[in-house]
Image (cartoon, rainbow, N blue to C red; front, side, top):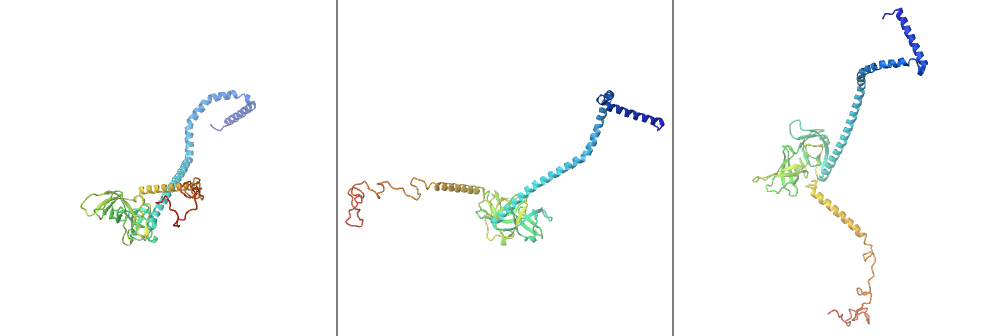
Length: 369
C-alpha cells in the first residue's frame, strides 16, 4: 500500500473510531453496548483460535523443552556425581574395614610367632621378566627389605622376596611351580618339601614313605639355615588328599594353602626372625579346640555361679558353720550332762567322782574285755 493522502486519512479515521469505541465501552461498564458484538466475535473467532493454538502448541512445547534441556541435563549430572561420591564413600569404608581386619590378623600371626615384620601393600601382579606367580610390594631396601626374606599375611605363608629395589620388591608366591619350602607336619613332626603347582594346591613330598598322614593334617614351615629364606613355624596349609602309591621312596600329599594368592592386599616381610622356634603355636585353633574351650569356659562360669550360691547359704541356720555352735541336747555325746545309764557310768545314779585312768586301783571298764 502506497503512502498517499487517502491512506493517511483512512488510518486517522480508524484510530479515531477505535478510541471512540474504547471510550463507549469503558463508560458503559457492565452494560456496555459493545457486549453483544464482543460475544458474537468470540463465538466466531473462538474455534479458529483453538485450532491455531492446537497447531502451535507442539512447536512451543518443543522450544520450551529445548530451553529446559540444559537445566535438566545439569541436574542429572549433579545427581549422578552425588551418587558416584556416595558409592565411592561406601566402597572406601568397606575397603578400610577390610584392611583393618587384614592388618589385625597379620599382627596377631606375627605376635604368635614372634616375627618382626615390615608391613607392605601389593601394588602389582606378575613380573615384567616372565610369567611366574609374583607380586610387587611397596617396600624395598629403604625399609630394610633384602632378598630371601619370608613374606606372610594373617593366614600364613605368602612367599619369599626375590628382587629388591629402593622402594619396591618382588615376591615369588608359594603356588609358583618354581617355589619350594621345607615343611613339618603338626604333632607327627614328619618333614617334607612343598612345591607350588600354579593353582590353589601345593604338592608335598614327605621324606618318610611310611609316614602316617590323613586329610586335615596341618603343616608349617620347617625353617632354613640362618632363617633365610624361610623362618620356622609359619602356617602353610592343610592336607586335602594322600597319594596311596607304594614303592616310592617318598610319600606325596596335596595341601590346600591357607593363603588365597588371588586376593592379596596387605602382607608382612619378616625382617627379624623369632628367638625360639614357635613350632605349632602360630597355627589357628581347630574347630573342635574352639568348642572345647567354649565348653570349659561355660563349666568355669557354672562353677563360679555355684560357689557364689553356696557362699550365700553358709551364714544360715540349721547347724551350718556361721561362727557359733549349736548346743547339744542333754544325754547326747556323753559330755557335760547326766547319762541315763546304769553301771556307775558318769552322771548315773550314785556315781562318784570319775576314776583316774592312770590309777592302777581304778576299776576296769566293764565294756572293755
